[in-house]
Image: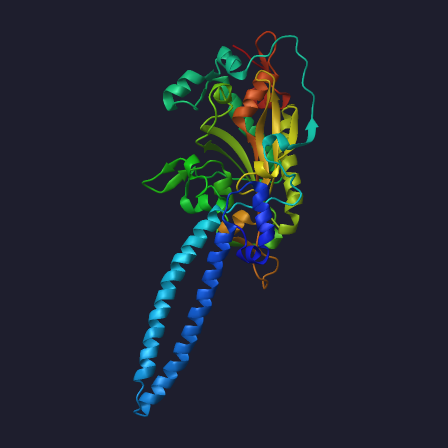
Length: 423
């Protein structure tokens, strides 16, 4: 949620930010409604002051047994008008709140302008892709040959977009989660176990609702939502809180399943592990001082790439252009790994700075000193990492001519000493 005072003070900045993000938002209508609200507030405050002043006059006239009927009649009209204004103000406040929740965050000035993913910028790359003497297989063929990926069972149980990992596939998933959490703990993150169902207020706080309601899985009876990422419960742990500024940054990590109604074309885009409705992910969340949040974004991104380097996976860091940013992000880096069997780069993490956008929605504040006015924190989050595409990359990148798949060295202790996945 954007600062209402900032919107009034600098509407041209907001208008330009919305244009850069490609957001179809009626800013002029919003400002007109906001102006109407402020005018009505001034009118009702004036009427209430008059009512308070005249009430003393009426009291005096009655004590002197003088006629106060004309004043009483005027005050009745005054009271009726106040009731009318209060009713209109209630409706305007609700409408402004509704509109504000649909207004996206503005891109940071450093974000490159662009209208499509092709305008994203490769900021750096690590590692080299191995040369191959044979045509690499896609991960779904490798996984089924090894007996660790059961697509038919997933489809039978949940329909399109669900998968089953079996045997060593399940062990690989568990090993990756443990490795990632162990590394993040050494990076200073507190490990948290979170609920997988959260309230509507939590989803509004981090920006999934109301804008992305169609992408969420909901329990209508309880008005609870399956989490699309652990970002939601981790960030909302501090909803309606005022933190001690000396504690910042707060650094949290959690492993959880994630539930999303992923949209996408059929064919290769939805085969295997690339686009699924339920998947495991390790998430990192930071609550930061405003002036430090962009430095924290760089370190958050480095914390995520440390996982890829530990897994010996070549990657590239992509800075998203303005129109490829998410609804709530002010700046974002995507981490991509190359899957040779599919012949394409796969996004395995997004590291974003939301500035105070989520904090305003969730009312997360801090005080620099005990007697100072609270300020909104800046929130950041990043995947560290999303498992399905990491598993797909490991299978495709480390496949051997004999059909076995080499397990990255850092994972070997978590896999009971095993160095290869084999049938």
